[in-house]
Image (cartoon, rainbow, N blue to C red; front, side):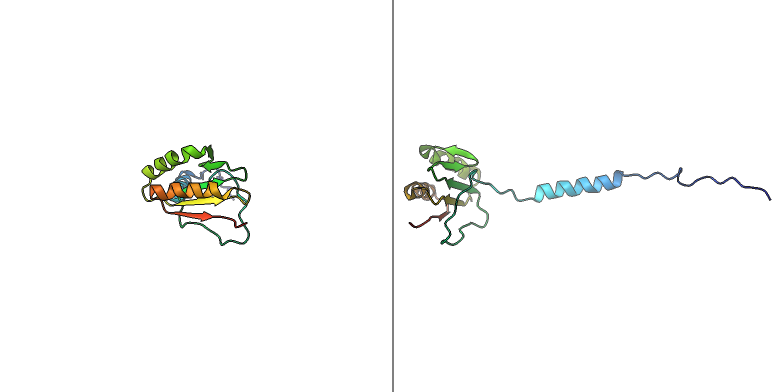
Length: 133
């Protein structure tokens, strides 16, 4: 009986990972491109408990008034006098922009209303969250 020499098949088989990596990268690019980027004002606001939840469908301008009456837009503190120019630039970038103003429970109502007046003067639709004291 003659012995035949057997060659191991495991040594001859190689896995090509390129097609799988191509698919993963295509999916990654697809999800990044189709993702909705939410803009945050940059400060956490204590919302009033009694009021209804105020939010726009897809707000593109988020303004927050902190408890110490600092105005936050795009994670930056903006002086009250500079709010109008910042909002004008944002409206120029997106003419169909909608806005949301989030007021902290301890923020002065006058500051929130002044910002609302700027939105109205620029013709930007806005929704406001205000606590009643």
